Amino acid sequence: METIKTLLSRRSNSQLIEPIPSAEEMELVYQAAFRAPDHSWLRPWRFIEVIGEGRNKLGEAFLNSSKKIDEIDEEKEKRILGLPMRSPMIIVVISEIVDKPNVPRIEQIQSTAAATQNILIALHDMGYAAYWRTGKYSSENNKYIANELSLNTNSEVLGYLYIGTPSKEPKEAPKLNKEDYVTKWE
Ligand SMILES: Cc1cc2nc3c(=O)[nH]c(=O)nc-3n(C[C@H](O)[C@H](O)[C@H](O)COP(=O)(O)O)c2cc1C
Image (cartoon, rainbow, N blue to C red; front, side, top):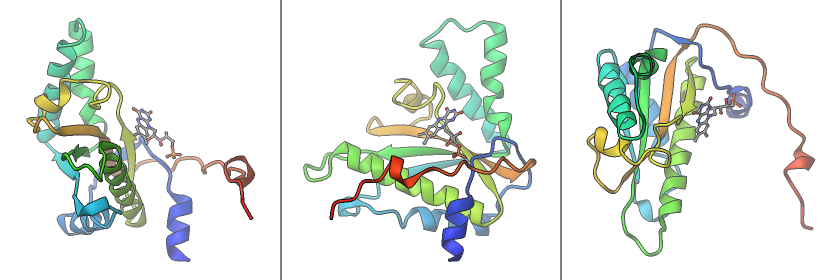
């Protein structure tokens, strides 16, 4: 029942500080991600782990992609460059889509999303916390971001996991009624 407890107690948390998971812990986190269901074993997931100064590079990619879409004044520029500073570690979640008739794009994205949820659960199990964000910087919302991150043209950015140690415990998750979401055929 330990797994169930971990699943039921996970909450997103945006209040994140150091320490970040160690390299040994991240090895386990990624191995958990790689156990996601994956049609035809395509391994569509790719991750960029961003820490320290790397966050400035990510901020630059956010900014450069924004400039191609919007007018960015000095104040906006400062805000965008500061976005990756909201946590000490970020994982960029990417799906590298291959052309495979029996595994449509959506299934490759679903598999990457399942891998991402495994990351969230593994981190929570280790006492860390995370927040999955897309904002204006997923490929769905921003056609320039993949190029700014130096990704292949068949890569799609699904989001950013902001990761760290919770500085404040979040409120308990609301309990949802099964009847609102589940029907039964018997
Ligand atoms: C694909 C995806 C993208 C998301 N993007 C954002 C976002 O940009 N900003 C945000 O505040 N929450 C975003 N969320 C929601 C949060 O990650 C989180 O799930 C939500 O605040 C509910 O908290 P909980 O996970 O504790 O129930 C996103 C969630 C998903 C699955």
